Length: 367
Ligand SMILES: [Fe+2]
Image 1 (cartoon, rainbow, N blue to C red):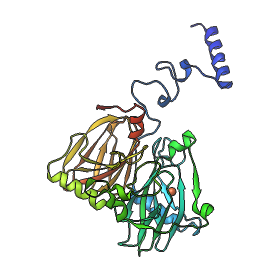
Image 2: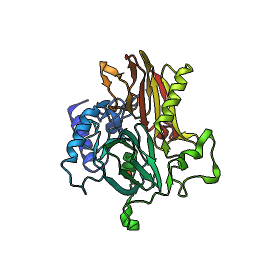
Image 3: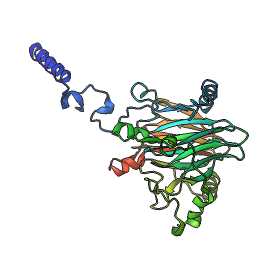
Image 4: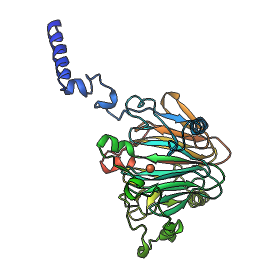
């Protein structure tokens, strides 16, 4: 190409961009575009995020330090978020492009007032006193014990209480990044709506879980009166039950070379994912075993609940985790997980796979 054509082409492109236009050649062309590959036509997905792993010990130390820096009023929702280094300059508090994760602390005798939001959220309890810590979701008092999963679906009131004798620390998982990008954020504090800061306790947890005893739905007393917009009325999944299920499956020889022993927390009404936007799962990786690598179009955050595992990623990158460490795997990045220890490892996962499936973008392939 002669210099004259080249220079007029450059001028043309500069003019396009200066006037808020662009063209396929510049923006997304598979061969000629020089944009960030995450926003081009690439043969397989390239994520705007990077794999990353956060140590619970590091996050927890900062959470405790934060509690000495905030006043009681500022300390409402006292938390530390996990931030993907590739996203930090343009998305605050994003662990992956669609998922937020963080840990939150309530000291003994503290409570966090009631609020609700359009984003779906869940809590996964990391540390708790023997009794006295609970979350009130739409009037239901749900105990917070280690490993319990508590849902606060789209537009449900929730407040947290610690009447126990030690700290309660939990992981918060949210789909709020969707809401930000799509313009779907709504938020309300109870005090502005009703004048009260907290909800009355109307039901205990068994009124939620007993609806689904024996895998059957007790339709007569379907909780709650206000059906969450996610349409999942089972908002409490005690760890003791989920863990027992994994042990039983292990005893019966269950397992998959690409998944380990995997159980998904489902919406019992439709057998679908926990939320329309997020699925949550628990898996066991048996002692001295490896889960083989796959590519999957999902953004997934793994939380090590028991034991220690190593994630093996491209370019010999590895993350070795301890309990409550959080590991982010962006879409299509292949990873295998090995457990070299003498005991089984248990991993919780938070994934946006339901969105990929709903939009017909879901694919998987052996690595
Ligand atoms: Fe909330």
